[in-house]
Amino acid sequence: MVGVQNKEFPHFFTKGREVGTHINARHLRHPVKSLKVIQETLAVFGPEGLTQCPTYEQLQELKYLDKVIKETLRLFPAVPILGRNIEKDENVGGHILAPDSTAAIMVFNIHRDPTYYPNPDVFDPERFTPEEVLKRPVGSYIPFSYGPRDCVGKKYALLQMKTVIARILTKYRVLPSKECSKMEDIRLEIRSTLKLLETCTIRLERRVLA
Image (cartoon, rainbow, N blue to C red; front, side, top):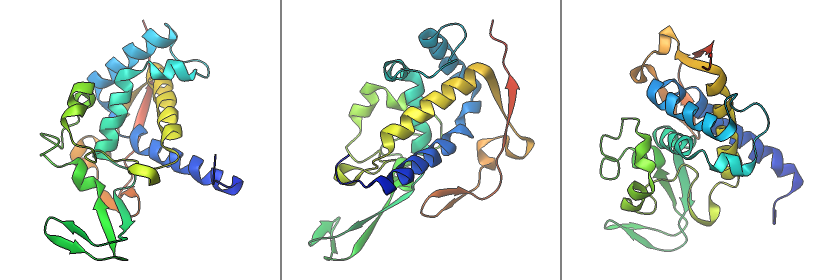
């Protein structure tokens, strides 16, 4: 990797793991979506599900799981605010941004803008079919930032999430805790990363595959 020092690699791996944490504890408990993910996983890996390290090609076959992950990152981007340094005068909606000033890009707000996402608070993986994606402008979905300075660890994070979720859902049912039984119970605080204000745990129940 050009321009990356060995000491920086642990940072990329841990950031990828943080992103995975944001998805694993939330939308895996949607029963209909979970069932579709399970069916897809069994179709790709066989009747026993994911029992060993998958290949890159196998993970690319998990198309529905890919949509589930993208929709979760839309609702809960791990990094909800991005900062950019202004290099020259920029006119944004009639407002002049001066050089050497800093612009904050509110990823959380962009991802819940009804202009791009009707019923934005509803969890709907079908927003990420190829046809729906083409309807939205570039920059309306930026969970890993955008452009030459986007997240170096994004591909690693996505592969890790696919592997973990496929493994969990073929072995366990994911159930909410009493304290966090519905979407409205999730309390968030926007910092440099998105943080849960209170513990929002899940329960795992071993699944018996027919």
